[in-house]
Picture (tube, rainbow, N blue to C red):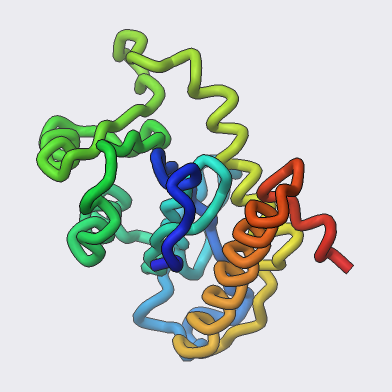
Length: 201
C-alpha cells in the first residue's frame, strides 16, 4: 500500500492493469510455479510471466497492488486487495471504482457494494448502455496512460528480475518512483501531477 496521500487524490480510485512478460524459458526460470502463460486481450497476444493489478487514484497515484500469476482471476484479486488492506476503504467517502469490462458479475458487484464501493465499467457485448458511459473513454485513456508510464518511462517490462525476490523488488522500485514523483508534483504545484518529464534524464 502506498503512503497516505492528500484527500484530493484519494476520493476516487481506478483499477489499472499492466502485463509483465518474462523472456526466460518457462522451464528454466526460477519464477516457474508463480509465473504462468496468460493472454493479453488489449494486445491480442499470449505471454508468459506475471500480471500487475494496480489500484490508483485519478492522478495515477498507486494506492494498492497485487502481483499474481498471469491466470489469476482479476475480480478475485481485486476483492482480495480490499480485504487484505481494509484501510483503503475505512473513513473515506464512498469510492467510485472505474474498471474495464472484465470486472463484471452479479456476485462481484454485490461484494463490492458490501464493501461500500461503487463500480463503473463499460458495457459488455449484449448489455445495455451503463451509467457513466460518457466518462469511460477519457478515463480509459487515463488508465492506459498510467500503464504506459510504468511500461515506457519506468521500464516495467524490462526490469531484469529473474527470481521472485528480484522481480518483487524491481516492481516496488517502479511503483515507489511513480508515487514519489506524483507526491512531489502535487506538493510543488506542478501543472501536470503525473508527469515524470522533469525526472526523465
